[in-house]
Length: 261
Image (cartoon, rainbow, N blue to C red):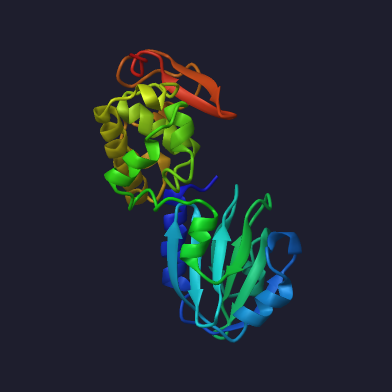
């Protein structure tokens, strides 16, 4: 599933290809991918332009020259694709904007878990969906406040979008591996130093992922992503990587590197 670094890459891609161009047509092959009616999308997008993007976590907001803001969630397999010739339309490009210059912006969505919506206000949407500040912009003070009075595992808390918007499953595992903290460690058993270490690791993982365009193979060799599978060997200790379930999600950690103390 696209997480914060991938969606940041999509934001940059859209910024460089699809802004400031008049929209002349809107097409959607499957109305289930729209959280507003197709007629509303046509009304608010056709003859307008996409003018600026803003990302909060895994949500991408695209301001238009009209009255509405377009919200895109990429689901499991969503991604943007800017192309010109009709024969270049991606197979799973279920939503397509056509621009006056003859180019098209397709929303590829193979498994159809991604969607589009139209909203009036980003702050209101953020509040209604209980999103924290984007994890890349989150302050240490707000992070500490979000963790106060939590009595569950740190892995579960890290994936709560009201705590650190944009952090998903692999990122949470990586953050805890870089922090040397066991994913089952309870937040209420953590010291202030533990929390600061996790915060610093979160910022590090985000920046490394963005700098490398979320190409996992280019990450530093001591990153868990290279050996994130059960039975693999920990880079630091030579110990075993173990897989457990936390909050219904597969969780990987090093049995010797990440020890509950």
